[in-house]
Length: 84
Image 1 (spheres, helix red, strand yellow):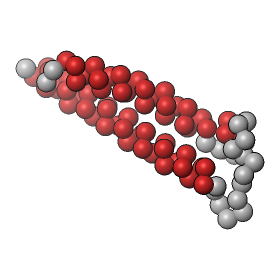
Image 2 (cartoon, helix red, strand yellow; image 1 turned 90 degrees about the horizontal axis):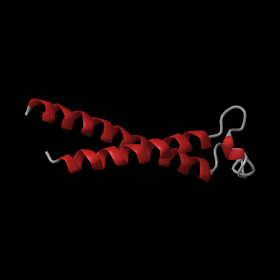
Image 3 (cartoon, rainbow, N blue to C red; image 1 turned 60 degrees about the horizontal axis):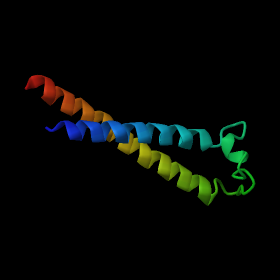
Image 4 (cartoon, helix red, strand yellow; image 1 turned 30 degrees about the horizontal axis):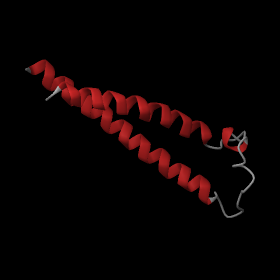
C-alpha cells in the first residue's frame, strides 16, 4: 500500500480525535456540561432530550465510527508494511 494512504489516515485520525473530544465535551452531563454555556440547556423537553441533543448524539457516534475505522485501517496498514 502506498505511504499516502497512511498519511491520509493519520490526518483523518487527528481531525476526528479533536472533533470527537469537542463533541463529547458538548454533551450535557449531570452538571450541565459545556452545552449549557452556549444555550443548549435552555431548550429542554419534558419528554426527554431535545432534537439538538439527539443530533449531537448521532454526530458523536458517527465521528466515533470514523475514528475507529481510522485506527483499524492504520493497524492493518502497519501490519502489511512490516510484513513486506
